Image 1 (tube, rainbow, N blue to C red):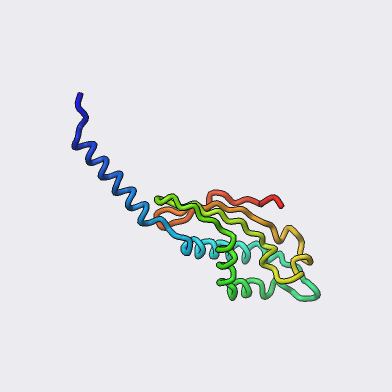
Image 2: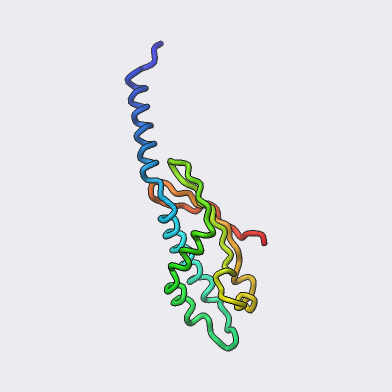
Length: 141
């Protein structure tokens, strides 16, 4: 039995087309930084700010979300410095290790409970201009 040459050619062209589409839509580091900054902002605003204690008579909760919104560029830079990209051409894997303690200025981190300032490890796949975080866990310090 002879292989169907036309069928194989069509399948080859289709596979090539899919490969080209994946490569063309593989999101880059800058797009990942925007995605990760948005996700980190959501996490800090929803989980860290509401639990922030009073420190030296100052209610940190009141200005927490606003401070996060005003410092988006610093958050993006923090993520950029904490991320390693593995580009496989058709998709990318981003590995990010974040220690929230590094976000707190000066000695203020020592005044906050350790549970408010955990370290996390994230792995995110970028494909077809989209991101999906498939691993998010507390890191062992």
